[in-house]
Length: 290
Ligand SMILES: [Fe+2]
Ligand SMILES: [Fe+2]
Image (cartoon, rainbow, N blue to C red; front, side, top):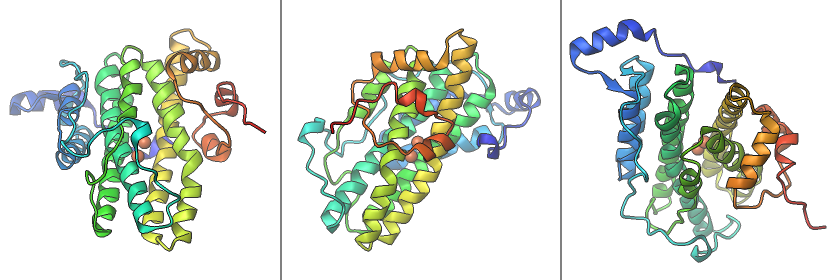
């Protein structure tokens, strides 16, 4: 599933050329520049530039700077605790749809940081394919943000116009020391959650006559299956190379680091497409009240 991303060219020759041209930017520096871009447009541009530079073989596979503790954030939106967020409604009214698209844009902006942080923080000592995958994911997230922000503007709003909450980075913060914990919580729990809820949201938007927003969410959904697949694949590889049984280690990490409740119903077919088998997530799911 990940094979559609062409890998970077052989870097041994590229490195010489870049040193002689004085480029020599590293993967870590490119990732850090994305995390430190505060304004959304600057972050999107940095993400695209980093992904392009890596694809073209212009970045050295080196991890010579640390990732920041927190990514830079724009002045707006105002960040509020999750329980103080205005109700989104069901996506029927235009106001409800704007609130929904705004919340999703906020998640995508955070997802840009999470993807580049994954590559820049944990990539040292891992194959270049790890950077291929997470820089590719980061470029997708930048596209998702841009599509949602453009849609908000065509509805007379924009990203930053409403408050947002800051829950996503908490997951990153608590798993900054362990790539397996990060992979378990971010792609395999949080991004997989998106697969469960998006089809119904697309339907609601279409029913409300908002075909354009529905199409954007459908596009995001397709990409997110690939993101969950990347997380699942790297989790299995790193668990096995670390001597952990993947499923029981996933359950252990999730119980330690995931503070939310994972509730059915699950989108089993999308999760299966991403290689995420139900014996992983059912073991950490809460029982549905009957
Ligand atoms: Fe996304
Ligand atoms: Fe994603």
